[in-house]
Length: 192
Image (cartoon, rainbow, N blue to C red; front, top):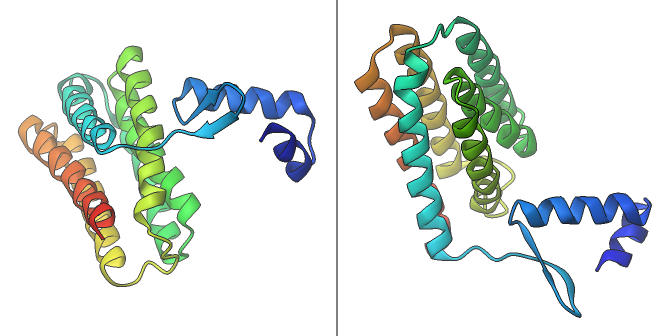
């Protein structure tokens, strides 16, 4: 309820309304007559479509990125990668998701294609929602979640390596593997 958000957050109605409208345009919430705003549920079809989009966009970005000077991009990706590692060691899940998002968006920006960058950002915003859900309330990063993020660290390092080497096939394959890693994590969460 909009009024509850205004009271709970202690801010005016206008910023709350603007935030809700932005979340609506990002398909994270929907406006329902006589009910107000509600969080849009994720369906299995949404999740399937999300991973299909990630595969198409991120593997499609590979050749465009490799055609560019990737020096600055690699530097920014390394910085985001270090933030991912630090967030894991500090069990800071919010920063972990942000840093991972930044890592992938720096890769997309290397392509120089504003349409692909915007498309990936939109999909990644939805993916971030899945990332939070897939933690399943585990704020400790122990057990299989810890192993998952060790794999993520290794895959990020390989993405940077293959980008620096300008190896199109290896880069495409590690991007696909990286998406599969996350897909398996989400499937495990959804089926548990």
